Length: 374
Image (cartoon, rainbow, N blue to C red; front, side, top):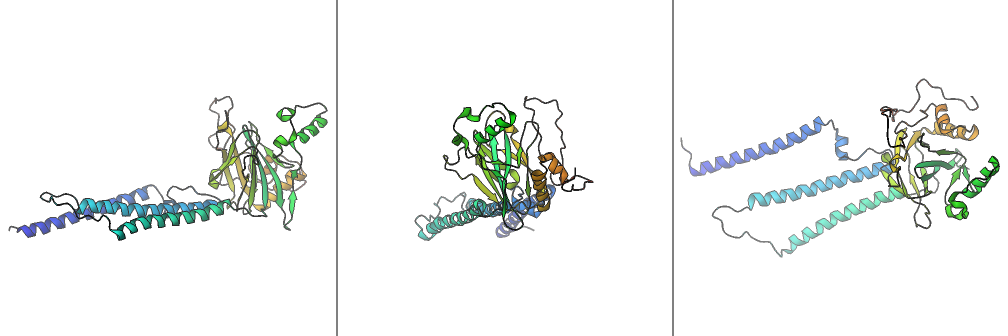
């Protein structure tokens, strides 16, 4: 039995449509297979590669990123469909020499194509400003105020003031400049010690802050900044020499640490609403600051509010070091996210591969030490 010309055309069209459906189904199947084989769940997929943060500010930035990518995919899909439509239905065919119908100077179409992109940009700009204001916002009464000092090539952390249970603040800041402290050390040691900055006037580095409870990094010890979960924290940044940068990847936030903030017209303070879970989070200097820039690492150790109060009490009353106070509250006393680097730019292969679990920093079979116990 032979098909007429019209029947053959209809059959060919049906066959072409069937092939298109199969191709679309194949693309969808490949996409689903890729998703399943990578082990990504719906939440990981909707992050579109955005890291998991541990602060509300990081979550807000992640939400903005997700919806921005979704909007971009929608716009991209519409553009692709327009391109495929033109390729499919307006391509040149044999025997057709007429010029396609043009829509130049079609005011409704042109106004639509101009207005829609501006509306999309305006919506994206609005939500960007909302999230930026949340990230940069500062409350008048943070629970913990920390002084962060970057210097070549390490960090110093000090507690400026901490809010007590009755709402008042306990201050640990030392209201003296570096030269006054240096002179006091001279008297203690009984001999003259070299003054910083070549003995120049005290107001050169008067923006640097000092505390009675400090943690100082050394080439042999990673500085650990202990902070409570669920509390608003303010960081006051300052550099003693060149420009550094305070970066905690899990905060999804980086802030330059400048010397002379007043002269540089910069605000050295920023806040986070809270750290949402206990754990250890690596911190780094993200600004090229000299020879050992890559070695300027530190660690944020987030503990419960009760453990934080005990830690501060042990540091204040018993004059324990950071490591000793951490061990006394049953925390791993050394960094579990990074290790000191070999400053001679070589290693014998003895860098440990497993230095601890950043999700669980508690010491096993440990009992919290009571105050005053040795």
